[in-house]
Length: 187
Image 1 (cartoon, rainbow, N blue to C red):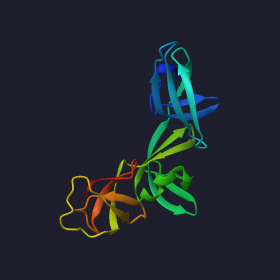
Image 2 (cartoon, one colour):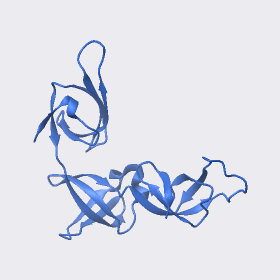
Image 3 (tube, one colour):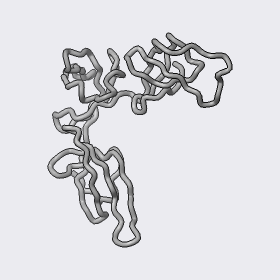
Image 4 (cartoon, rainbow, N blue to C red):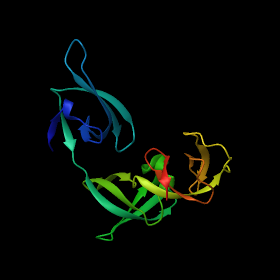
């Protein structure tokens, strides 16, 4: 595995650190007035979800890990396990539903997701960035309420609450960003 300098760490990189696999979530490059520059890195453990803040000087060497990414189709949920199928080999894999965390409601039947593997171990599931959902409950439009940035609460067909523009009504399809849980556009 390639070693990189501490100042080359970028958000999204996967690192082997202290015997575990960690994803760099946030990286701040700090250059204090006295002393050497360093990178303040927020790491998330890919196996158990723990968070860690670590400082890496530019002279520090860390192992950068490459994960294999495979597109797989979601088949069904059985209890707290999600079953996915590789569309090329038709192999199926069952993963715990908490691997998606709070993005779980956006997983839809037949959706193609990207699963990251380290060897044979599945570590992460990435949903598409934008998903189409139906608004099942929202307030009616009030005439004259056309302020530039006024949003109203809405409940989607998957139970998630989002803020939507006043012109979107009930039973309309909208596109939601799965990373920020925000309205993106009309479908």
